[in-house]
Image (cartoon, rainbow, N blue to C red; front, side, top):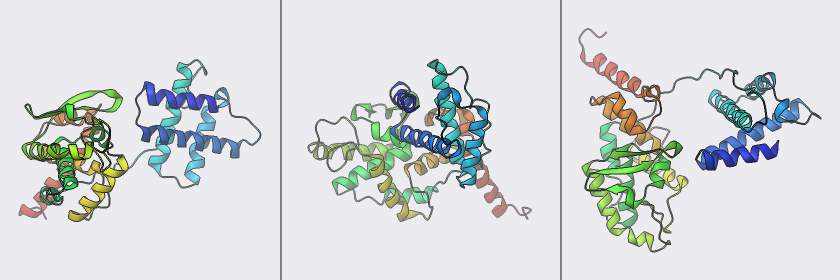
Length: 299
């Protein structure tokens, strides 16, 4: 079974271009399934053909008994569905035993966002007179101006920035590329940073990535998350302080100001419009609060 798992992980990393984070998560999920199998079926080797729908449902109950979060259980089921779909494609199994197992219902969580005043204060936090401050300012501005994902930010190359047209080319999930516009403040911050980027690049070795660490290497997810946690913490009390906060904020502010939902979907690189629709709940919630505060017959 371990041979099939290793082949599957290589397949989603190279063939499907899954992020290292997702590949690592799936590896942990499959190891957890093997742990469950060993504890529930001692002395019975796990083989691809020996796993049936009942065993997978039992695995979900096993996770629930150990108080795993509903979202974690749903992800582990999604992993098993993907794994056995791969095994079927490779003709290792005749059918996918996880295909008809129903995922637990997830509680819909509204994304955490910053208001426009907090965003303005956020952009004032980096010390732009210092090299790292100029880089951080450009990083914050482009995240808010374009709504790109963390992985897209890290993979952004200098050659992907088109100042003449005010756009960047990013490679999203599934290696799909899209062109996204960015605003005047992001343009100014990017120009200022790129003018001194050579100081970072000199410590590396011809790295094409736009955003570099102090050592001249592409910035890591951990490094960017650390910066976001620090800067957002200076202007907001929200618990979640990741690059995704600015992605959520980007989408919410566009919709608040009347942007078309389908246009926001394309900017975010979402596959489905239903994914983008969660931001309409945020906008409606804001309108409801405005109504309650302003309308004389609201209460």
